[in-house]
Length: 126
Image (tube, rainbow, N blue to C red; front, side):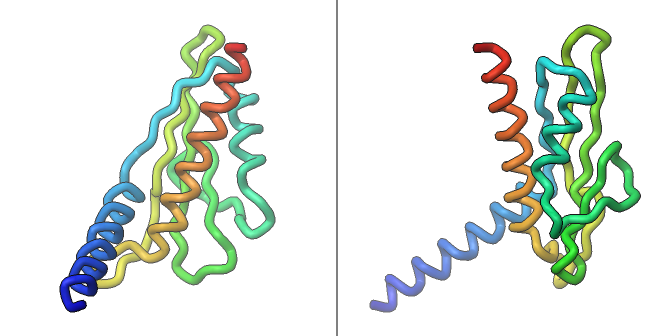
């Protein structure tokens, strides 16, 4: 039985490390749409519990309900044709003992934004 609990603790530690590392990484998505259309898709992913804040990206959002929540920033870089690059990252966050506060929140939101943009890319290709 002790082996089971040791494995559970190791699994939770590995999950925490994975989320911490992935929440700090930049995500880049290339979409076949204009900068304005991509910005509309991104804005639709944030509900009333998120607020726009100033930051390093073209769009920056922070969760209202959590103290010390990270800022998710989005930058758009059109290529002059009919494509646009979208970069998503966590621009500001607070840490405790070297761990990002609410890292899973940022990790989930970045994944959702990337998947919504990829869905729109698939829909445009069809």
